[in-house]
Length: 329
Ligand code: KG4
Ligand code: ZN
Image 1 (cartoon, helix red, strand yellow):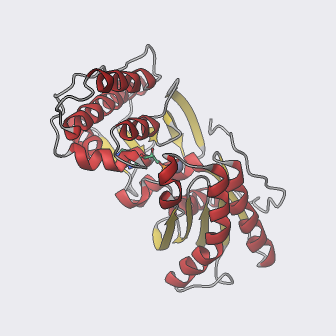
Image 2: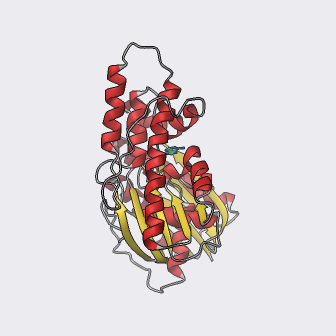
């Protein structure tokens, strides 16, 4: 079964063709970072306008690279939300139109279910039940997943998402946008023990990153004009986020008594997090999403749609409307 996936929830216009939820025939992504860079964050109106410009050429390219046509596609899958409403609307409208015109089933996909499904692209042998960490620019959620399609929230951030904290502190350090990858790169040359940032650990299973962000801001103000290496501050900040995520993951694994972890979302691309997880969880199975599919892409949407398609038969939802805020559980 060949599924065309379409993703436009934020600032990436993406299309992909995936066969049977595992063979990626094509995955094309057009990032808008050059448009939003000078504003230091995503400007929703500019994002939706660029999606309109990019979406059809990107879909054409994905079909061409997959050496296939719309007629040969078995279903069209699209991110229904959560995300920026204007951005989501572009993908949903195009997907509905293509599905209707070509008489193909339309499969709406929750963006977070897409991120979780991306882990299967690198680890087809993931065992259920598992604990999944979704850490991105908008989410830092821990889920208990007994099977695909069933999600229980164990904990989530009560303020900033981990990716948001990376982006905001990277901005303070003048590392550009998006800040996560830049912080990751420069931190490789820094000393993670240079600043002893707090490891925020709220009661229960939730996360909190805004206090950590504030302590970085305070440290930078206190040391203004002084001689320090940005790489050292970046490495120290990154270490505090990674420690916090790893510590809570350990607690979640214990609480749910699982043998499998799944790590996904943009922050799953962080090299220090990946290294630390492999080291700290040597006794259980850790599925790290393949690097190319951590940040937003459409292969994850087509993969999630395949899992749904094999579980149900009713997909022709032409009344589908995008939703900026929808919870997975
Ligand atoms: O999943 P994603 O592409 O979009 C959302 O659904 O939010 O995640 C983007 C987030 C951004 O905050 C970005 O800075 C962060 O993921 N990110 C990283 C890395 N690569 C992307 N954070 C830390 N280290 C990275 N290597
Ligand atoms: Zn995402």
